[in-house]
Image (tube, rainbow, N blue to C red; front, side, top):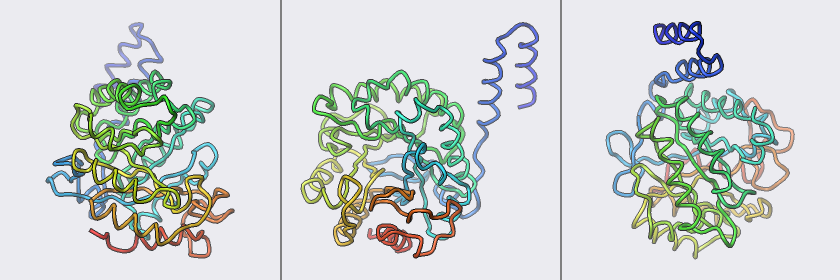
Length: 339
């Protein structure tokens, strides 16, 4: 590493572009192999892969990840703390975190990337997998974000190319009547995934599906020609039931799925929570070996939030700090998987 940096600075003295060299130095310095605590999820499972429509560990054995998604890092970024991640890892047995970088918020405030990086680093320190979520939502069509997405994922994949724990989610929830798999989402993925693979050839990539990541059956009929790809299924148990589970059954016969966002409430984030329907969905997912992240690690004024308003951002949460949804999710995480 020292010789690389010395060479870069020799080029700088010879008249190279200072900004470009400093960026190269930064990326080189951060692209060190991950160091994960002994016995932690990443230390046990290593580099993930997709085999026979299942997410598997480095030995090819199916693995089930369970964890939390943050809310918008702009509105609830105070919960992006090392202490909070450590608490979830040690006390609740979380194995994956998903920092949600809303595209709209990121365009308004690029410094939010630092909050995302903090969670990625905290996950490494605790041996958790971390999903870097390009949170397409208000933009509807991911193609409208393609130039920004390519620049972002090129940077992140270079920064974390040697980090076993990093997963890339390239478009959270494509939505809108005109946003189709063939016309929007698939071409977007075909443009973005090669950018990631150029830096991180074996990285797991999660791809959103149309209709707020519900049309997994449509994507499964016309899958991407890349290895180590998972297709996102999202649901809120008070709104989505047997019809969406049937889509999951159909799709899982063709492709590997990952539930990167689900809630115990209505799709609005309010109403409920619905513990019976939540258990039904979790038992169903886990029986299919589908990993999941619950929405959301926040104290948002909505029923799907994990925490009550004003809860600490440093972890240490007791049941009194949790919403009804938060208590359900906590005890689900502490219980053995249904599979």
